[in-house]
Structure formats: structure tokens, C-alpha cells
Image (cartoon, rainbow, N blue to C red; front, side, top):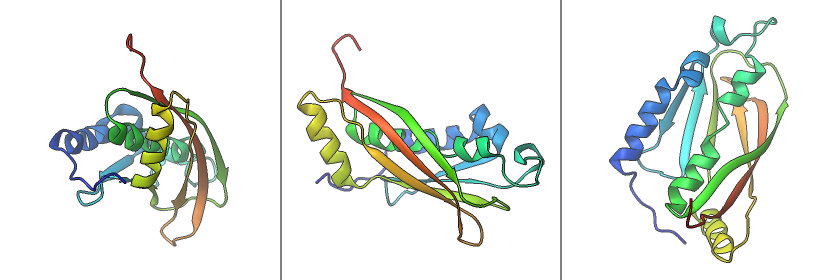
Length: 158
């Protein structure tokens, strides 16, 4: 199992910079990285006029945008250099209208990172499936996102 580790300063800085990344800034997505748990990222989004659909609830594209890169970021961060990590595909199931502030907590356990690394080190392409729930202020699940990553060892030319 990978030992717990503190998040390096550059990664904390990256977590702050991502909050001004234009697609997130435009959708009103905020990202927070726990100092205590480097395997977890939380994204949230307030309901604003610019991310509201015709029915006065969160626009589905914004709900997905707040979920898109974070599993790949966590896995890539912990695998380190020498691995290719992509978001390969995703499915979002909208369960109820999103109103107010919604949140998604992304967590990839160290044991899962180790399993991915072991298989990739054997030369396999690894396609882990990870799930996150988008939860409203009332703690009810607004949407569920199932994401498949693509992970492999990097080739020398990469």
C-alpha cells in the first residue's frame, strides 16, 4: 500500500489555479484539495444565472464539467511520471434536479492506485471504472457519474 503523503506545494498551487481555469470559472465550479488527504478532491458549484437551464436548475453540462478531470488528476498525481492517464469515457445519470450548491467528492484509495500501478507495470493497459455522486444541499444525490480511465506505462518517446 502506498504510504499517506502530504500534498506538495506545487500540487496545492495547481488546485488553486484550476479554480481560475476558464471552463470552471465560467461554470462557477470551485475545487478544493484536502491538505490531510491527498487522495481526495472536492468540487462544488453554486446555482448561478450562467449555469442554470431553462427549468431553473443546474445545466447538465456544468454538472458533468465539475466532475470531468478529477479522477484522472488523482491517479496521475499518485502514479507519477512514467504513466499515461486519460479520461476515456463517462456516463452521467441525472437523478433529480440540482438546485442550490452541489458537491462531488472524488476519492481514489491508495490500494486502487497500487492495483493500477501493478497492472500497468506488467505492460497492460488498465481501464479502472470510478464513480462519484453529485450531491445537493439536502444531501440527496442529483447525479451519478461513472468514469472509465485509460492508464498505461509511458513509452520512451512520450
